[in-house]
Image (tube, one colour):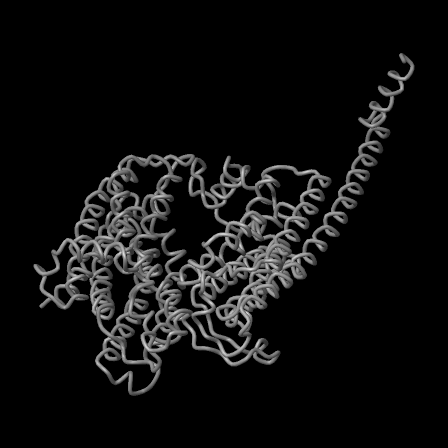
Length: 611
């Protein structure tokens, strides 16, 4: 009885969340706005979001009680024990995930009708998505092997479904007059969302159904049925979009076609909800019986060798998915430029490929695998993510590529994706974070905040914490090198001399941190690596000091390269400025007027005569 109720409440919780996503998706992406201000139709849609947010909050609370009853193996009334409720809510990761979800629903309920601009709607959209994906990290996908791939693929699967189904539902909520133009925009991303859903769902099924016998289970039957419905949805979506855009755009018949599509999606979502509360077939090693697998998500690896480091590969599904998505978007941008007859420098594409390869090696490759097991390899991965991969990404000029390929607004007054990116670049926040002092503080200051406090030990305990660290290393390094040697547009002009001073400061701070780590007499991991009981590198303090030495050695080289690049850019800028002045002088001579350099020299000569 309780199990059936759990399936029902989870399904209702998902439907309410999807309704809220639909309203925010419509307001932020599908409907027209004027100079970033939401129009009456978007405000009408957001007012409907109040009911979905309230339903989401209510069902989340109910589902929390039902989940507790399932965990305790008792009835619903038996779950209303104050001590049990408090313990489950504050001392378990699953209970804490309900706090985040309920918090997101509450924020949406209190603020959605007060949103007036695109920026506020986007922020609320992000909060809502965080509330939806938080329980993913506590799902059945985290109970067996292939932990990183299972969690990452499920994460992308949930996000893809929310945007895909939410987008179709949003089209139903939009008025007939606005639906025609909204359909065109949604069709541009529907294929991308469908590919994400199919690819991530396939990867997740592979991690759970690892053999032919597993596919013969009831769980495998549900997965196969869901796959069949997804194929039907892809066919229906393709036929509907083509038929609607060509013949029925703006007509009332569109509504009925969308209703049929939503009905099929509802059946597929029901199967997905059923799967979420069902136990998949055993994949062999269970986290409850393998302590290393339980702590790191991977089994203990043999002693590291060069061959192991080069060829080991255990995919981190979340990071791998982000890299694949970024690669697909970058390739699409280059292809769009090529179709227009514009050329994109091959060196930038190669730099992007090098950045992707380095980041993948540091998260899913040999270094990424052993980074879970030893501090020295963790530090190698940190240096690759924070100092090597960012240089490749920065030199690939992704912002310039986006500015040249993103679509503009559908009407002259609308800020399209391109204008939105321009607004973000010129925002006050961008000017703050791209200040060289702030970029340096984030880049080097986070070293001390992470490793010289208990934070590192806490983050290493979970897949979420490890992912947070990897993303922070990459983003902090990308921001720093973007400010120093970036080729993309920068919100503020930074003199080359200031860049060089910042680089020397970064080098000194990094060296000081490494020396402090090498001379430390206590472990900074909070006992995490000791709990692994690895059979190699048994001296944990020596391994930590080795990590400090690696950080010093690997950190200085990229900074020196950036210093050389800054000198080269300085020389080139001076040469371009000299050529510009020469061209201005030639034009002035041809026109018989005085150019700015001659006028300035005459002014200085006049000052000299007065003295």
